[in-house]
Amino acid sequence: YCCNHGSLYGVVSEGLANPEIDNVIGMVNGIEGFLCRSHNRHGTFKENGELERIRTTPGSYLGSCRYKLPEDLSDPVYPELFQKFTEKEISYFFYIGGNDSMDTVSKLSRYAATVGSDIRIIGVPKTIDNDLVLTDHTPGYGSAAKYVASTVREIAIDASVYDNKPSVTIVEIMGRHAGWLTAASVLARKFEGDNPVLIYLPEVAFSPDAFIEKVKEKLTKTSNLVVCISEGINDGNGTFVCELASDVGTD
Image (cartoon, rainbow, N blue to C red; front, side, top):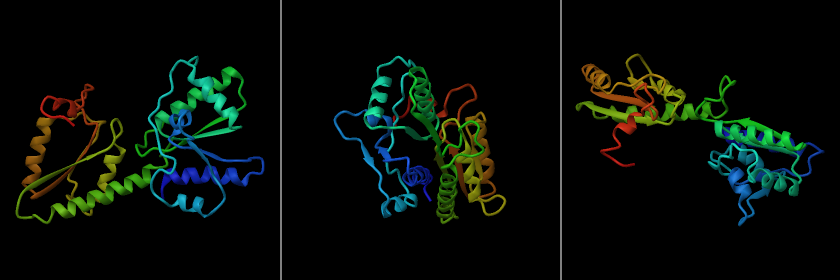
């Protein structure tokens, strides 16, 4: 079950079922795609078997974008967007995503209020980071957490093959400022002391020296050590650990 597509399916199916809605239009690659002048970056949904298949297919049917709307609501991009909404006869605008997407929803809502637009701007929460405010958990986190747990379990089993040689496997997991995904790796453990033995989250200051000592200690108890580390581990003062190695390597 794909949460992004599950949310999309819910919005589209309800829209198609409502007699007051003439068409449900999907924006390819979000606001950025909608603004693109050189391509017809949208498509109309229809009631057919394809919609049902979307609900259970992993991926991102409508694509995505990282376009951030300007803070200044007087920027010309806003009247351009709402002109396009008018041309497409848009009455309800649903935007699926995480914090940046909800930021887009907030700005469009505020602009709509300033110009007296009747368009309803609605945000649909979806993020694997599980870090949207005022939510117990976000759609998307559960499926991503399951993937992390399954993957780490497979890595741990693979590492255990070389039981006669000490090894340390470090798994970096997404989550710049939120450690929920990395924390989900604990689900890979089958018993106390099982891998991943060590888990590091960005919410807790990371000490390279303490990390090395901890690894040495754990290697006296197990020959195969799996460590799960969030991409956002930092020194507690705002400096990411990855930045400390910027002078010795390039990603």
